[in-house]
Image (cartoon, rainbow, N blue to C red; front, side):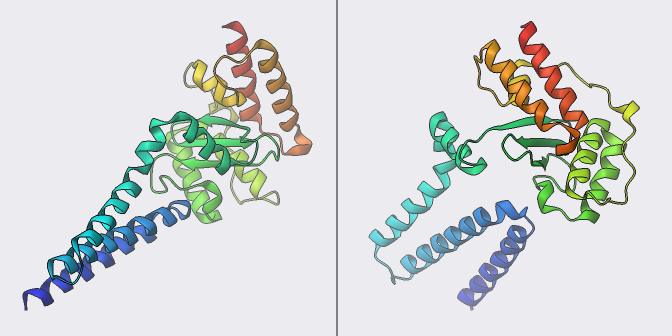
Length: 239
């Protein structure tokens, strides 16, 4: 009877954890499934060892594998070069992109393709990418942005205009509300232009010129990002 109760408790726990993984943003589900699988393997190993069905060496190897997998994110953060390499792999061969952050969104502009995407930082869709959200979800996010952060609403308007060129059944954010909410920092300015720390004046000017070409109306120009790009250039050159 105790074993049956234990088995039921394990199954219920697994179902709950599986449900949580399914609710993760799509780009994080793979990692969630991997962690869940490793967790199941570890629990199964411990149970088999306690029941005398597995040698302790096998249990130790399984535990070590799970430990290494769990510590991998910490190891990546501890080695900046490895982290940069992984980021470049995830963003493409060149990895060249600009980043603009507001209270609700972190938007990225690919320098080569001109594609705009973003990640939700707070709220119902926290950690979801905009490209993973449907139109109804994006409109819900737009309503939330208009209420709490006009800058985020403007960025989201630009994204919706690019993704749904035929119209997305939403009124554009009021341009009069789109004032700069805070002073830009050096780190933010470099991120906007897609530059590394210590960039030269020539590199700043070249990055600004290239990005402003991407902002041309014929290429899906983005007024808010264009303003941020100009602000970043002016900030860095004044510094």
